[in-house]
Length: 132
Figure (tube, helix red, strand yellow):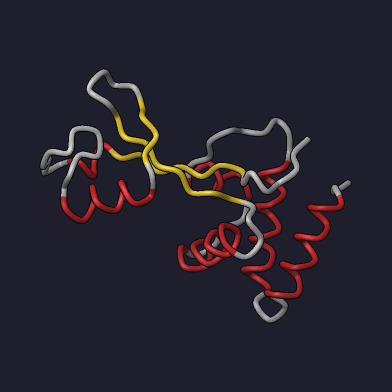
């Protein structure tokens, strides 16, 4: 049984995607995966895709994830960079964008041509979700 908050999110998904059944069902499946125990603190694109059990196009999946990050705040995008010690260090979206666009290491501030390879992208359940 869904919590009141989850039920409200499902109702919004159903309303917003009434004419796009594929995206609607994928949004509902992602929500179900995110709130289903055992809950994971960090989720990769592949984990979410595999966890839904729905085979969808990349464009449909991107639409669903973008919607769930914005309109209903189910997912948050997070970034980490591998430090010199090999351990991940959280960085902001702005730092990740600068690293990708200008090849600037957000930890050292220096140019690093291959920095994009060291940035990890994850999703996490939104802080707006009541997962208690």
